[in-house]
Amino acid sequence: MKSTYFISDAHIGTPEKKLEALKEQKLLSFLEYVGENGQRLFIVGDLFDFWFEYKTVIPRGYTSILYSLWRLKNVGVELHYLAGNHDFWMQDYLSKELGVRLHFDELDYTINNKRFYIFHGDGLARNDHGYRLIKKIFRNRVNIFLYSLLHPNIGIPLAKWVSSLSRQHTQKVLPPSDDDYIKMARQKFDEGYDYAIFGHLHSPRYEQFSGKVYINLGDWIKHFSYAVYDGNEIKLLNW
Image 1 (cartoon, rainbow, N blue to C red):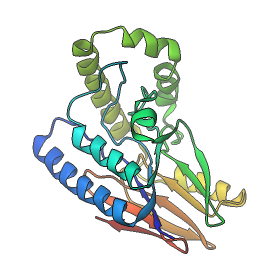
Image 2 (cartoon, rainbow, N blue to C red):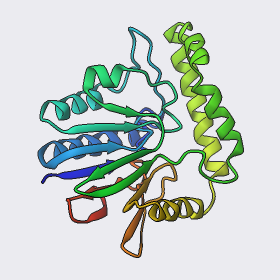
Image 3 (cartoon, helix red, strand yellow):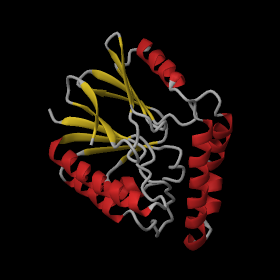
Image 4 (cartoon, rainbow, N blue to C red):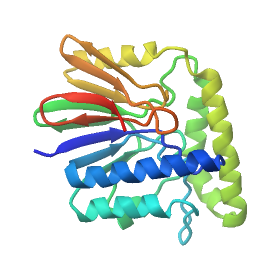
């Protein structure tokens, strides 16, 4: 059995050019490794700093990452993408062109008779009331259609601006600990899950509770962290 990999929060496409070059270099080498050793890859939200799909236009700057995902598909790696708080405007490009299975909320997935609860985690913090309202507005199909009427030269820069505001908002309202996430994980363990995997906090953490495992995946901005499940145990590592 080949391994299953989990990553989140790369935020490819931010304005910091040196950091972007480092992130891309590390991520491309990781994806190549997954292609050689992996059976599945779960991207648990916010691979890109923003994503909006026009019918005939995709944003610049993502070509090498998209090509690497396409290569993974062609070597038989099963690809999953769970939408995060920077992924409001996903439609069918990734699924049709790259074979990625899109999930717009939490995911219940079983591997080797072990049950995984996987969720980006946006809006989970108790004090994040404002974001939960914004999430409903941004994912509304009517609003997405109206936004698509903007010319890409206007819509994409505007989306980048909105994305930067989202990042600033997250930094202000996220709790100093992941207590709310651990509470959710323990609830899921009581429901029969073996593993609870989250992103969003940009802070990697691994905890065991009576044989059950909680993981926050961290990010690919500072930590370059990922989880790997080999069919017997799950580990949180740094690339």
